[in-house]
Image 1 (cartoon, rainbow, N blue to C red):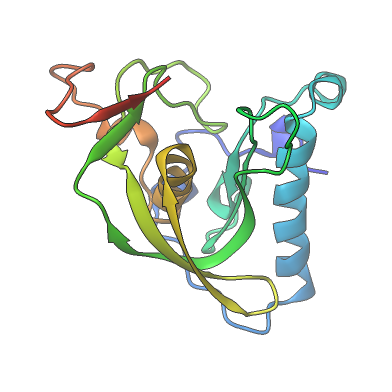
Image 2 (cartoon, rainbow, N blue to C red):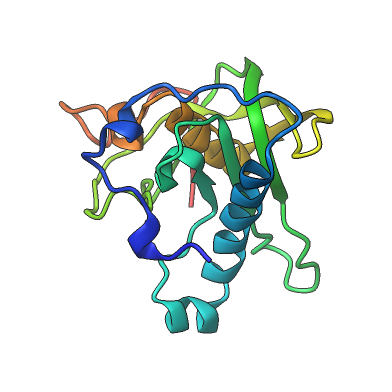
Length: 188
């Protein structure tokens, strides 16, 4: 199981380099890595388990964050809106993801973003695209295309950035950290 000590921290060059595409069929180690990243997200979102293993809760984890310079990420966005329906809003292991299109309308989290690889709190709005069209491959090499909006779109863009050597705070306006563009959406 991946623990906090296994998470690559800000300052490590792997977080600032462009990750390499994976080729299919994936190796057994690559498949295991995908499952372990998803397992981290599942366990970290369970309060009791997270406390037991001293994990910070996460909704996404990219391979560079565990030291692998490859284009793979796990995303698990829980459904916090509907108490009866606990089906995640988006739960996938993404291999070689590509954002095919994105909306013009900007969106940001009102609380700002955080990252398992960044230990300090970095205040400011991280403006992203409210809607994206995403293509990715699963661990078996099957191609998928889906449209995401709002919070799931934000999470996927955060993880996609990791595959390109970008960290969330790179998007924060350094002169006005809470600058709010016209026609933007703030999610609380």
